Amino acid sequence: MEQAAAATPSLLGNRYRLVQTLGTGGMAVVYRAHDTMLERPVAIKILREDFSQTEDFRVRFREEALAAANLTHPNIVTVHDFGYDKNSLYIVMEYVPGTELKTMIKQRGRFTLDEAIPLIVQACAGIGYAHRSGLVHCDVKPQNMLVTPDQRLKVTDFGIARALTTIQPDERYDVVWGSPQYFSPEQASGSPPSPASDVYSLGVILYEMLTGELPFNSNDPSELARMHREVNPVAPRRLNRDIPQPLEQIILKVLSKEPSARYRSADQFGRILVNFSQTADTYAANIPAAMSHPAAPVPAPAAPLAHTPTPSPRPHSVAAAAPDRIPAFEPIAGDPAPAVSSAGWDWVTIGLGLIAFLSVGGLIPFWLYVWLSLTSMPR
Image 1 (cartoon, one colour):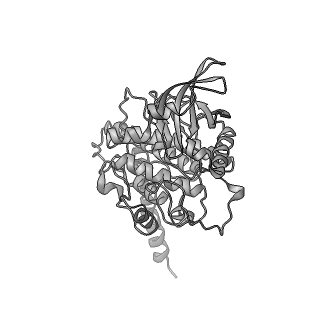
Image 2 (spheres, helix red, strand yellow):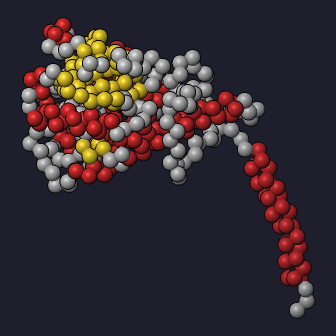
Image 3 (cartoon, rainbow, N blue to C red):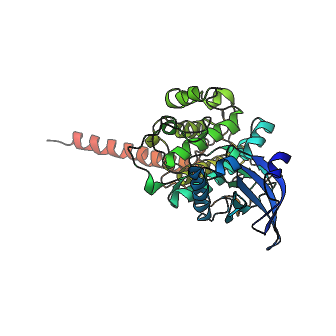
């Protein structure tokens, strides 16, 4: 940490004073810094000196700054500035006081549905905005997601993002970009990425958050790539029985090998998750009312869909979270309404059916009388 700081000027561009090393990556070091002009904390990503001498890496670093600078969204880390000083190429970003989602996964092991779904929905909103802006992130992983103490998630690191307009369907790569634990089957095979590739990576993260395990794991990157291409993941409910079956089906869909079998964008995936959560909350809210019916008690469902209606002091539930935190995805048109328990009696329907039965049954003697009268008449 001290060695990295020693190789970097303490004041960049006569404006940004480096304060503390926040993290190191393969290409760059990230610092917490102070903007002496605007008097605010910022995060500064500085390209490593050995990479700064290579034109390809300098171009990629600049492209990352340009790609992220054009994205303004509450769930994406904002880029403020880009510069070059004393052989140091740097990007100035908003400072997000929070924790990497990967660190949280390591600390917790498993997340509850109330904790996991709101965070993934926010990730879908940020990455979905990038998709609508014509970018594929290509490196979606929990290490590139920051979570603040009030549970706001922000996506960062568009270092290998691709513009949709530059992607050709027949592209093939000898070098595979991305993180082997999280990249999609098409990325693993060197094929061009698409928004559905980011959706796959989001599915891997949700799987890991709910089960505490990755769907595929190996110390060999080549073996990981093969597993993404060829091996079906273990069903999440085998690792965590608290995962509702409808949510398991959603997760397995986004982990499909074929991009066309997944949801087409992060926006659509986010809407599906919000719709699932709202349906689960409505189902749970109907249970107490049905149980209070005088006809008969309602048995508990075999697999509760998710949240109990009891209010929680933690703002994690999709339905209960602050409105400025959870994106306002619209429910998917045509999605089925939540089922109502069949154990309760619908007395209105029963009454109407009884009236109809009596009405029809009361006509039987009349028609019998008419028939006897007609048959007894002299010919």
